[in-house]
Structures are given as structure tokens and as C-alpha cells.
Image (cartoon, rainbow, N blue to C red; front, side):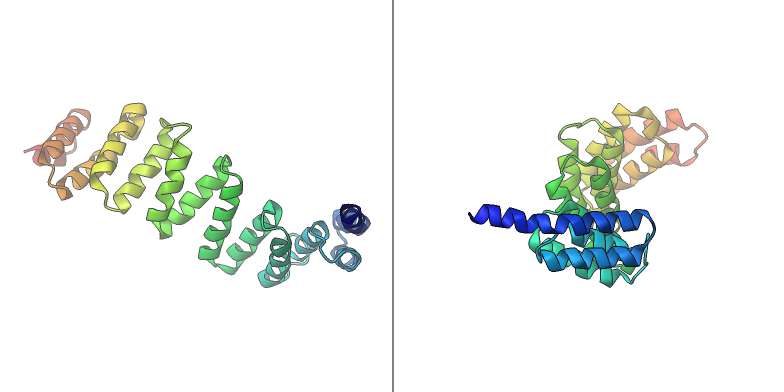
Length: 228
């Protein structure tokens, strides 16, 4: 039936794809390109052979311009939108082009497919934190659900809340972070908390942070002044 026909057609790419991978291992990138193109002729919907082709075009082999890699990854993603390898190669190509928006958008697609990938989530938050902190916050909230007491993530959340001027939430997050990891309650922490509480006209909190800070940093002349 149809499924058998599809499967035997899909198998046609396998030989060419194996040849392509072996050529890459041997450092023969041009030969790998020919092998991949041969596999794609055999099976026009080939995704494996196209991945090998995109790799051959990429920075580790032929060093073609990023658009050459993207033209192949776009073909793969038209055939298989959830192809993580193709998305990963596209991130590298967009990064090489300096297109940070596309880098973030592509990483977000990957994150939807792999929400448990911490390293990827951190990359997205760092990339977004610089350009669009409001978009980074919901991703960080997702990451905090399984481990709400992670001090590094709480610190990121604290900074993002400050960047988006959500003072009350930022102060509360800062306090939780400092309670969980006292090392994070450095003098910079107190200065930031005091500045946010001042902006929020929360004078009780200003006095509270200043007196805590004065006990911890008696040599800093600003804290007793701020407390007063």
C-alpha cells in the first residue's frame, strides 16, 4: 500500500546519506555535497540527506555564507517543522548573520519541542534579557516551576522584573533569592533593592534594606545615610 511505497522511497536516501556522512568524516566536503544531492534526487523529501548537506555547507566544512545553510534548513523545516537538528543548524546560521531576532525566534521553536532543555532555556533568557526582557519572563517562570528555589534563576528573574519596572515583584523575588542564597545579598543587591523601593515610594522597605545593609557593610557610608 501507500505506506510501503513511502517507506521504500524514504529508504532511497539512506545510502546517499551514509556516503555523505562518511565523506564528511574523511574531510571530503565537496564529495559529501555530491552524495547528499544524489540522495535528494533519489528521494525529494529527504531530510537526513539535507541535514548532511547543510552540515557540509556550514562553518566546520565548506564555510559557505549562512544563507546557503539556511536555504537547506528551510527546506527541511518545510518537510518536517519539528526537526530539532535543522533548527539547531539554523540558529548557528542566523547567529553568524548577526540576526538576533531570528536566533531567538528559532530557539523558541526548539524550546517548545524541548521544554526540559535547561541549557537552551538559559541561552534564550540571556538573548532575550538583553533585547526584550518582558518576553524572557514567561520562559523563566516555566523554568522555575519544577525548581522554584533555584538561586541562579531567581537572580535572573529579579533582574528581568527590575528591567520591566515591576518593582513590587522584583523586591519580593530579590528577598527570596537572598534568603535562599545569602551570598547573593551583596552590597550591589542592597543598592538595587533600595533604588527600586525608593522608585516605588516604599519607604518602610528602604529603611529595612538600609539597616540590614549597614549591619552587613558598616564601612559603606551610603547605607546609614539612606536609612536616615
